[in-house]
Length: 62
Image 1 (cartoon, one colour):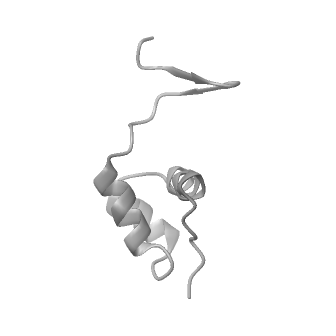
Image 2 (cartoon, helix red, strand yellow):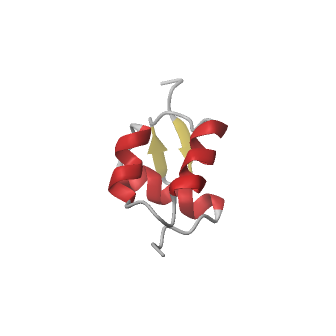
């Protein structure tokens, strides 16, 4: 169970985000569909949305 991290009521087993992945997310956001960003990063759609929200990155397309 050492892989689990407790955050409020939620248990997560996902991979940690690398700084380089967050930079790629920020670069692609705004001009690339979220599903394509998720596929490129090897992450789920929801994972990408949550990280963008946490980092204050807008996913709205221009």
